[in-house]
Image (cartoon, rainbow, N blue to C red):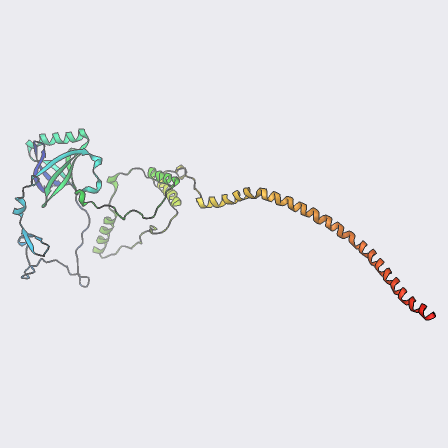
Amino acid sequence: MRSIWNGAISFGLVSIPIKLFNATESHSISFRQIHTEDGGRVRYRKVCELDGEELEAAEIGKAYEDADGSLIPITDDDLAALPLPTAKTIEIVAFVAADSIDPLQMDAAYYLSASGVPAAKPYTLLREALKRSQKVAIAKFALRGRERLGMLRVVDDVIAMHGLLWPDEIRAPEGVAPETGVKVRDAELDLADALMDTLGEVDVDALHDDYREAVEALIASKAGGALPPSEAPPETGGGKVIDLMAALEKSVRAAKEARGEEAAESAEVTELKPRRTAARKSAPAKSEAKTAPARKAAAKKTTKATAKSTSAAKKSAASPKATASGAKKSTATTAKKAAAKKTTPRKRASA
């Protein structure tokens, strides 16, 4: 590896000459821009706005644009002359617990190597002190024209440094969390825990970039004059409202099967019915319990009414006889009155 910075670690009055190396590298595939009509390469040219002349990299410097639009030239010598103790020194300012560093602050990672034989002893001393204390060192250093924060920790037998963002460079997560209130049931948390336990741990070294491999295969096939068959990506169901309980249970079963475990050994989860359905089913039971005495009272009233109607029916059954005898009596009386009227004129005539 090629070092990108030479300096020293300032550990109190101890100075440790070191070299800085990039600890990471990118394996992502880079593309060039082309003209889609003829495939010609599209390039960027750096041209001076005043004379229209194309410039080489050695002819380009830095400048700060003021509020009024004017440019203030800043040279590398100007920056090197700044009274910064961290210009060539990684200055350790404190030792803290590793979990006190927010992962959001972590930036690029570097390896620190002892520069020369005399630096081996103090370098090893700092490394072993970090190991035994189980702490990390917070430091300030200057790199690429700006002062930065760093966190020193031990990786195997090497001191590694993570660049840290300044606290004011971390945005507050305002307006990111769901605005609507959501309640999570214990049964759902139990299923989530079961899924987490089933997935278990993973060997990070076994993970790889599937997208990069697919792009490399695409490039190789097109370079050979063939185009691999395109496959539609599987539907993930994003944006759809799902049954959370069912999805969690299915995920647990799938994780069990992926790990070679039997489905019967999956987490003992009983599908819970929604609370609304239970409430609807329990409501009739409560209403029946409340109306049971009323139903008994209504039954008694119905029994009494039935008895009264039965007696009335018996009376009505006997009434035709009385009506017939009354009709006979009224007929006889009428006949007698008619006979009396007829006999009265005869007596007057004979007189």
